[in-house]
Length: 327
Image 1: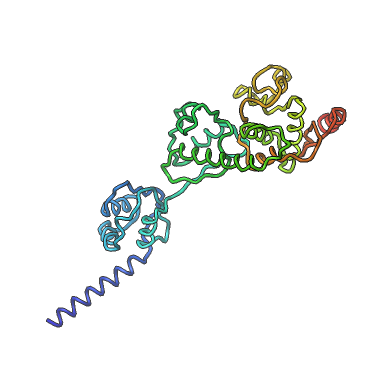
Image 2 (image 1 turned 90 degrees about the vertical axis):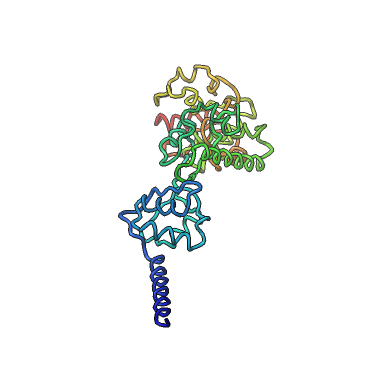
């Protein structure tokens, strides 16, 4: 009897030892598993089966008992996961319990318009295109902003998301981020700027973003536009005209375009256009409310990304001749 008990004890210890070694040993993978999906409410056995079906070369029964004996099987979270080379049963369980899902990211670039945002979301990997069939109006209503123009309302940044997430969730985060950045910039505004509301700030910042070739010029460009607004001078900025042309713009801005009156033609209309024309970044938002201490009313591109600023039309014409006409 004693020999039998000893044999049982030794066998149990051997199994425990083997189990310990197994949970610490790398799982066999033909290649990294990039699409392990755990459905909500999955049992330990269903999780084990999902792991092996995704490409992990382990017996599902062993994985099932490991999940059960660990006492954490009910804590496994639904989601999409990746299993990298070198992963062990122990590290895999920890990942599933902690909900360390496989993440992808999409970048929204400063200066983009809303069409470009939608195109980036359409191309993003493993992002559910729930907004694809929605009009701009329906999309904004879905985000809780009915009647709000979508242009410029989303903060340019890189947004991470779990595979299978809705693109509406990404847009919601970008929308809230812009709200926060806009509120922060508005709270820091110079009381001398003529902007009356945060919405006007957003519009002006979007123009500054499109007009800037060199980031260090943003405060000076802001000064030009704020100075013009203060004296009732038209902004006369090409990017607003181009925005008004929409998809019909072929890359060549013609004199006829500058003369054709539209809501976005700041050559024919005074004040700010009716909406932003792009997504401004943090620097452009701050520049709009903290312009440089300058009396400049004009600027022209030097050809190297920077701009030449002038206080008078005569000085501006000389700068145009020098930098644009080579005279």
